[in-house]
Amino acid sequence: MYDADFSTINLKTGLTKFITFLIPRATGVKKLSNLFVKVLLTTPGTDAFFPHLGGDIMSLSIQKFSRRDHPLIRSLVIDIVRNTVAQILSMQKNIDVPDNEKLDKVNIRKIDISIPDYLQIELELYNRDGDVTDILLPIKHREVA
Image 1 (tube, helix red, strand yellow):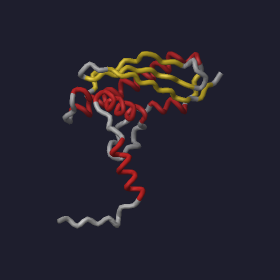
Image 2 (cartoon, helix red, strand yellow):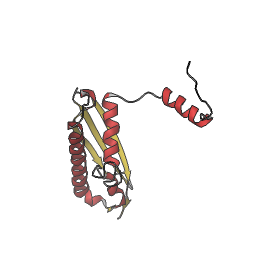
Image 3 (spheres, helix red, strand yellow):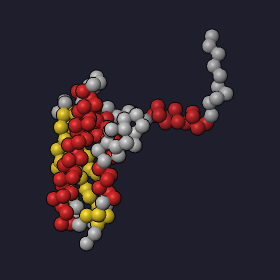
């Protein structure tokens, strides 16, 4: 027989384990989407294990833009998305990832600065199986006249 010690289990850890059991883990294109958004939102240097990792899209939130800066904003977003794609492709090259969780391409569908104080980015993310998911990122920024 096994002798179990339950003295270290409390209500909080028990509930955490129960909730973790109930919540299904993301797989396929949804898991890939989560990874993409995580890297896109990460500021390089903030992850202790992967300090080089990060798309740094949040840097746009502290900059001041006017509506006439649309070409500049579009260029910055395109560069950041391309950098994020390159980082994920590089990361996935060195590990065994199923095709339904492997990045194929990302299309930028729309970059919208017409909403006051917000930059909204719409992306289409494709995995190697051809599945697609949409990503909508509203980013608050400072707008100047």
